[in-house]
Amino acid sequence: MDPISLPVRSDPARRLPGWLRKRLASGAALTATAAVVRRSGVATVCRDARCPNLGECWSRRTATFMILGDRCTRRCLYCAVTTARPEPPATDEPERLAEACASLALRHVVITAVARDDLPDEGAGHFAKCVRAVRSRRPQATIEVLPADFHARRECIAVLCEAGPDVYNHNLETVERLTPVVRPQAKYRRSLEVLRIVKHLSPAIVTKSGLMVGLGETRDEILATFADLRAAGCEMLTVGQYLQPSPSHAPVARYYPPEEFDALAEEARRMGFARVAAGPFVRSSYHAAEDFDAVAASG
Image 1: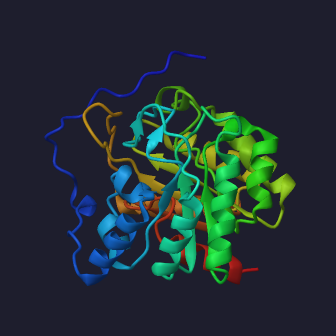
Image 2: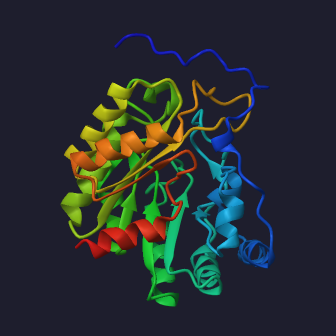
């Protein structure tokens, strides 16, 4: 494989294009959501990953919870979540998570997690307990999980599938060429294998994946990634703009205008994805409920 490098760091003082500016949200609903999150003691990817949609989503009384603590065992160059030695999983976290979901009256619950390579099952058992706790407390809700790759260990993936999530989301994040730099402890082909295993174990579970653009990939590489996902049985796709969380993270190579996202979405739909969400602010869990509803309605 040829040597891989990221593009030269962009000027940190460069202004964001107009389509990447958002008004700060406020209001009673946002304050109420923040109170529920704080009371639960469960981390959120909204806050820990510095999601630009936090204000909008919390104003709609929805949040994406991040279980197994807020310290990750991996260091990805795009992610703002802290890399450090994690604490043991909190035994009461499933109940606290379920209570928070009930308090917010969530109709679609998205649960993600830090990578826990330190645990014998990489956190799969704890993840499954969280799914079951939410299902017990909020039976009318659909549940979407977004775990790490579990090193594509079939037994770990099976534990989570047996808990019965409606959507199993595992993000490729970037194209194959850039994966060794952007996700040094992950593997592109291994992530594709995760999606294949899920469909083999539980065909009824909807599979989903996401991609960031703006890291130096080419259009041909993006389309090749879409094709690889379809070949792995992936049914739902999200494509969003990468934004650099801090100067120590991977630089932004360029900002894609909205019309390029529209064109990529059209290409993905032609490849057969059941649902495609593409845009500058699209993230894995952004409007996830509406996206799943559309897939469910289509049969």
